[in-house]
Image (cartoon, rainbow, N blue to C red; front, side, top):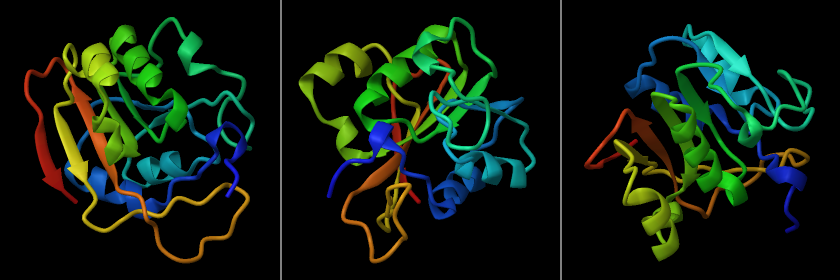
Length: 170
């Protein structure tokens, strides 16, 4: 299977709602890789005001906004499914911008790797990791969903400065 250009894999609401059932946000939520609005629409269903940006124009939010080039936070919270090849850079950018609470839908394998451990986790541990007990299926933006997923996903949550990580299942 070929990769979708710029990692456009819309997030199913079944992956968003479990996070929003257990995490609350104070203030606006920035969806900095908003794609077609999949996450933002669910956030709005839960009563949150969103700031929606994306590098690409997927028909939702403000396009041509490169999150990695932003110089100030547009909201105190982030909830997103980032491009996987740039996930570590996105997380570091949120930390550098001083975003208080940021949540990232990532493969569970994001925990692996000496380089990532030394560059990110040693200095900035996530506060919580919520592992999906039922696998989430991600489909390319140009595909119709069929079948089930084979990849383990989790929500990685940073909230302020954390010195330990709580792991739970959703």
